[in-house]
Every structure is written in C-alpha cells, then in structure tokens.
Image (cartoon, rainbow, N blue to C red; front, side):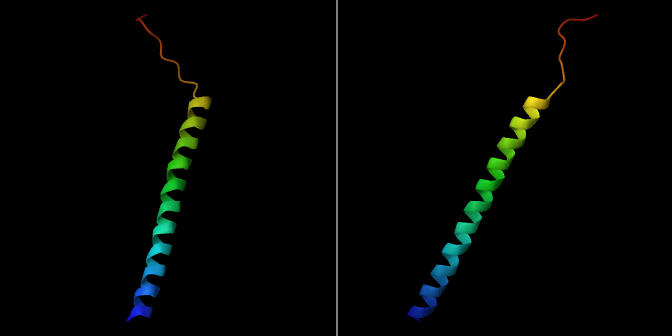
Length: 50
C-alpha cells in the first residue's frame, strides 16, 4: 500500500507542476500580447465634435 501512495504522490506532484507551468505560460503570453498590441495600436480618439 505504501508503494501505491508514493507512486500516486509522485504522479500528482507532476500534474501540479505541469498545471503551474501552463498557467504561467498563459499569463506571460497574455501580457506579452497586450504589450505588443499597445505598441502597434494606431487608433486615435478625437475629442470634441466636428
């Protein structure tokens, strides 16, 4: 029974590790994309009416 628990714990920690890496990749990718979009944005907002 102990071998099963150790094996399960190793598997579970591996899943957690990959989940953390996936979330970090999504967050970093989103920030990089927002930064790139902000740099290349050419939309101008005009104040006042014509």
